[in-house]
Image (cartoon, rainbow, N blue to C red; front, side, top):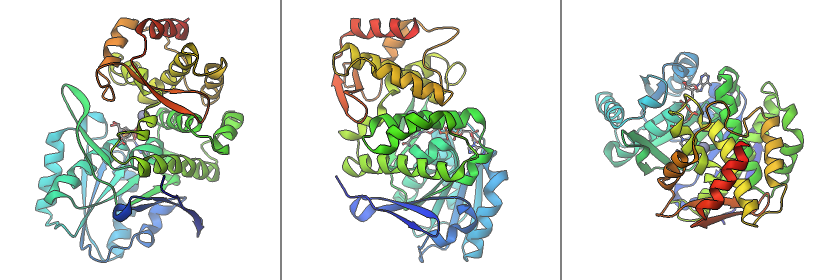
Amino acid sequence: MAERRTVMSDSVELVEVELAERSYTVSIGQGLLGRMEELLARPYWRRVAVVTDDRVGPLYGATVVSRLKGAGLETFVLEIPSGEPSKTADRAVEIVESLIDSGLTRSDAVFALGGGVVGDLAGFASSVFKRGIDLVQVPTSLLAQVDSSVGGKTAVNVPAAKNQVGTFHQPVAVICDITTLGTLPEQEFRAGLAEVAKYSVLTSRPWGRDLAGEAASLERADAPRLVRLVKECVREKAALVSADEFDHGVRHHLNYGHTLGHALEAEGGYGELYSHGEGVAIGMVFAALVSEAMGLAEPGLADRHRRLLADLALPTAPAGQVPEYGALAGRMALDKKSTGDTVMVLLESEGKPVVKRGIDSGLMEDCYARLIS
Ligand SMILES: NC(=O)c1ccc[n+]([C@@H]2O[C@H](COP(=O)([O-])OP(=O)(O)OC[C@H]3O[C@@H](n4cnc5c(N)ncnc54)[C@H](O)[C@@H]3O)[C@@H](O)[C@H]2O)c1
Ligand SMILES: [Zn+2]
């Protein structure tokens, strides 16, 4: 596994994503948007297109544009409507057309300022425009800071399914300004915490155990603590991406909790019943129950997950209109990580993930019954 370097510099935490000639730095700290030009050194850029959405743009667009213009860059803003429906191929083509109209060349750059939707869409457009130009991720949601902005996966949705069209296009830099999380809607903040919880049970590093003990006291206003948490999550993701950039092996571990999570999200109409984070939280408890039922994990894993997630104010079981197992099983079989049989990331214990194929369907149904009981 590639070595990771984490250093402290002027109160900015730096995490390297080691990918040979495509390596890059993730900068994490407070107030970074107001000094972003210091964190970037690309002397060949002349023009920059800032892709953002109509919620994040009005909040942070002016700061970013003024710093980039101050650094002598001709800067354009492209604003899309916020939300998942914007993540389409048509919208990506519109962005590419705007890049052409703005006169960007292969020596210029796209900045993705926003959550994972902007990051995936702008990432995709930047990867196909002139066969790929520099991309800087400036994630403003917790989910995007700990997950989607790092690792180079880009995507748009097609009517049949989410994220089925995409590329691998690593950013040249990622800038996580924790201060932006102050304006993030509460439900979106919780969604990000589900991914934080996921990393904490996938790792054997001390911060994961510490989170379990201190989750109930986590406050959004505690920026220094959030800087540390985002840094730890980015380190975990960077390690998996460095070891398996194209997702043929250990990068699958990031899918922990997502097998049932995606099925719940889809069955609930994408956000109407379960947000991505809620699905992942419930899916983690389900994966722990399956791990226990298969004899991989000692009893107690699922209960520890429940305590951690409840302390983070996340759900641990479907509530209200509980989906039928049959409908979820069909969706789980369609999961994009599946190669025909049911594939799940399971845990032998915290910090010891394993990928299992061909899991007995009766066992999974029993575990679902225990999850909802
Ligand atoms: N590429 C990857 O590796 C990867 C990994 C995980 C998820 N994703 C993708 O990420 C997307 C989800 O990302 P998301 O949860 O950030 O959703 P999102 O981009 O829709 O952001 C959530 C909402 O919060 C708003 N918002 C974002 N930052 C804000 C801020 N600082 N202040 C106020 N409002 C703010 C957005 O406008 C939006 O309305 C999905 O499309 C998912 O498929 C990609
Ligand atoms: Zn996720």
